[in-house]
Length: 298
Image (tube, rainbow, N blue to C red):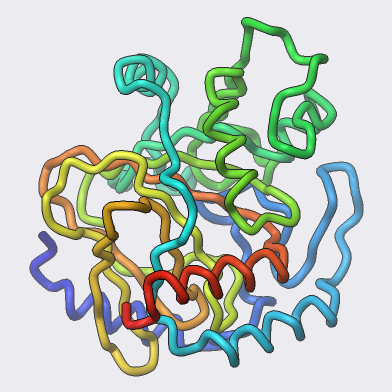
């Protein structure tokens, strides 16, 4: 565990407090989450579409949700448990396809995660021309038994600044369908699986920065017997660990109001990260029913 964790939390909070809710300073394409359909308060529909400013009506609706849900620190999601493929099959693919996630500009830096993209919009639509249907299932135009990998996706294709690997294969279809069925998605950017390798320093993502929940995650597999992911309020400094109930493995928090980090105890931990343009109505409905089931004292 990090010895100076509180100092790092305070430093992350101080940095995040600068232009805290200004999206023009945030761009997921510059992070481990890339590629993304939005950045610097601009959005696009695909890798071949022009970038346009985020619609004011869209921003305003999320500002309203921020007023409604700003007291939610973090929240378990009232959705079925997201199930990963059988562990032996998963590890066979994982050991072959995943890569250490490192900043390409600092290749000697220490990786906090191994990672594998199982969906990435700009590579997928460039090569496969939208091979997924509306439910997240692969269309008939995709080879039944074959897939492909793209190692270290190029900056010309994705704007990637971190090492990454995309594994496009029907092996992931069931997992993707679960995500598409239950996450509040309007348009999917990417789906990433991460395995923790060390303590993850407190930070916030360069994603949406509203007061309502913006980050949606699933703990696919965790050998730890105590919570490891913690959140700290950017303004007050209050810190809480995410301790999930047994009936769900998915949760959310506000990237606009919280920084997060993860303790490492030498045990395997796989988390699913979804980066998307969120659907206002779906998000509101999901958070509302999750509060009704679990309360909001998290």
